[in-house]
Length: 285
Image (cartoon, rainbow, N blue to C red):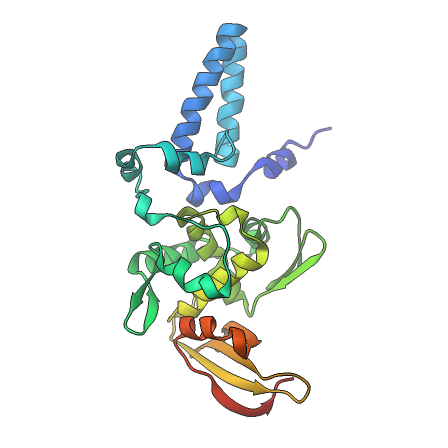
């Protein structure tokens, strides 16, 4: 016997439905669905056409779209004035093909995510507001596994702990804390609407981008207290010195970012964090 609820759950795409639903994409797909249903009805019978329309609208409700690639097509071909009606100004989106630590700052400042201020960059008020609003809506731990699967583009996911998962049975990912994980889930949902090409990014590229965003936060995603970020040069007897960057909530002591990189690749992270590495007499474990 077919388990209908299970089938519907597998068809559902949280990344494109609910709070993440794009109204222009939905409108375009509904028009396509009606057009196809009319064509089917003319070629067969009105009853078949009505059934097809019901199926098409059901898919749009569950998946957010009927035609794959709709977000790209919508932004490319809908007139600017139509996009503006739905709050989708072309200036709010940026096409990205790859992300590396060296390009993090340019990617974040090229759209409405961050802006240059003085000797560093800061989150824009609009992105900060949307990020915090999503944090307040998307904080349900029970549904977090599906959110992580969508965020990192995995087909299957297995939960190991409160902030660690195995993707597709082979790649293990871990966050510094549940607060860091919640921040990434909320940020990824918002980035998807602002960065065209997000779905094509590799897992590590997405995680670098999200880690960079967490370095820009000045308030804890869990308790809204201030955040302190420090950087230290770590000595080790068996390998070259490295740089450790740590961002921690001042009140609840939850770590938001813990990054250890080689000295040669530390500059992009230090620039995002707005700190300089201090010498550390302790050895890097």
